[in-house]
Image 1 (cartoon, one colour):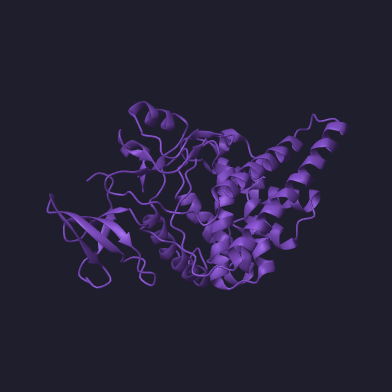
Image 2 (cartoon, rainbow, N blue to C red):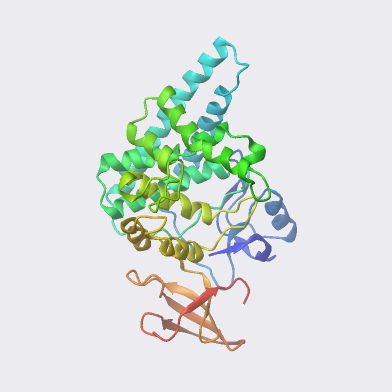
Length: 368
């Protein structure tokens, strides 16, 4: 299977991953044969890309957590964040406010239980490699992004050697890191074009508003609250809300920053399409020491695969190839199956880019 932009999805290929609507219901199930009308339907629901199975990429990639646990986490985060948004209504009477406060406490406890479950499941695993980006629509971005960032941060935290208690707080912190966005006007968050200075200033308020909400309305740990406050700080001091520099930023917030940005980059937004995994990985690597702590970037590079098995790539020798296997210590140089050379289809043959040092991957190909 391989990831393709929705505009490159062809009739006759098969959907490789179930996709869900903005309420967590199955929109199209894995294995469905795609037609032009189905592709149009997926696009209309705000999806920028999908996973497909075709003649070139037929294998499957497993998620690092069970799909049902991921969906349960997304549903729980959605419910919790929407309850927080309800509490921001000044017109609530005393009875309604008390009801929503009780509901919010229960939902946050449910998120904590799920975070612990996910940490316990992954903690004993070593050398975990993330091969998938999550498929999300514009409408369910915040909820999916919260869960995806949490899982990504957990993997990075394990690779970095964090203890289990820190991993609990890290995972929980990412699940609620964008809770402050529930208090930002939707017309600003979902604006199609570039934000002006005033709008950007409003969006930046989500970190302090989220921190204050968690401090005043929950029993979340200090570590969780700090992650919500600092996940947009950058080690060179150019982040917000306080312009903190490397030594001033809490270590879990540094992990959170890398995870959050990677998932954001590989997600479609109203103002831009998603980056390919390799482009997002290159951005993170290139921002080490500026935006991100270098130790966190090193942990990231070891655990995120920019060219998953099944990806079709352009090579510098004018060939097109399918990624067949990963060289774990050289993730930018996988083993590939060459299927086309100089514009002509050839008898497929394997090429180990770790050994062929004069050949590099130039980019990802969507049509052969």
